[in-house]
Length: 336
Image (cartoon, rainbow, N blue to C red):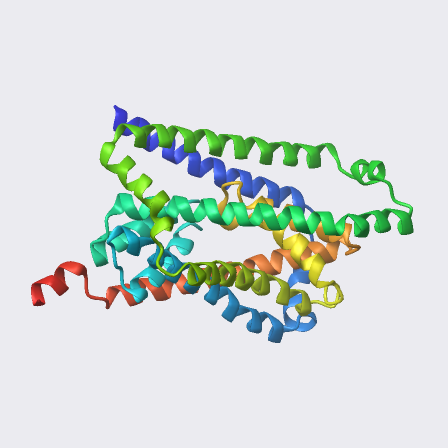
């Protein structure tokens, strides 16, 4: 009975995330002429810049794999570089199917291929997320404070008031925003419930705690900081270079790119596959605030998100193939 309830609960969470993402995308693109997308892709888009952005998308995940290995070493766990990176590639691809499942999957990969303790590795994942979230919040505060004059100047030169911007929101727009907020609260509820379960399991709790304190034992702190900066700088360049792919966004400043990047990063907290829906809505809204026409903003978020999601899938396929040819921990021990 408990098993059935657990399965039903998981199915509900997956269905909810898919419905939420789908509902937001449907609302945004209802009545949209998708035939024009083909014309933009084939004739109006500069693919050179898109291709130039790919190495940074790959580097971000490679840096994350290297940093993860570094956080595990103080716990006495030493995964191979190749396995650590492949686990990251695979985790992002799997999260496209079931949001957040990749975080558990990558711990499973290390357990199966390198014999790494699952609770310990899961603890370091929690640590990583906490560090990344803190970094994003700090950058967000600094960037938005710096951009206040830009927003005020926008209102002054265009004669636009905050009331008129809010007036452009339909009832559906407010509803989408409210749904995103509720989704975040539901996610927090499930996380707290899972944490309560972990508290009942002594071994798992011990592993999580070890993961949290593992940063104290990181041997090369400057390298850890460099990896963290490398991750987020690569993510940003992976996104910002795509501005040059479209005539409508090619003139936008670096600071505009940073603002929209931060807003998009916060939006993906809502548990949908690769942030589909909330990311589109958040980035499109910010681009409009910077003077981009609504249709151009819709093209931008649809094409950029779709192409970058394709890259995530390709990296996941590569990791799956690479792991298939990688010797497991048990096989290495037998040979020894």
